[in-house]
Image (cartoon, rainbow, N blue to C red; front, side, top):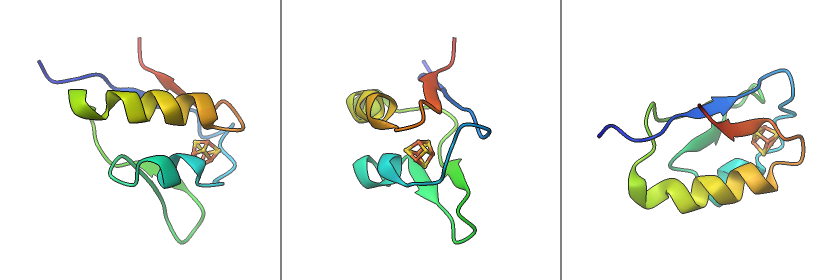
Length: 66
Ligand code: SF4
């Protein structure tokens, strides 16, 4: 079981860093303002934080991959 993946819609992302403030282990906004997902697979213990980040992203740029 590798874990679930996150889909990040870069066209929607405004680089505001709400996701990073919720879970810096998973999300990182670089100095260029580009947010990157730091993990390929989300560990089960971090799923609730990712749910929170998906819900909290002001531009709806995050979702679970299908
Ligand atoms: S909270 Fe949303 S808009 Fe902000 S950096 Fe994260 S994905 Fe991008």
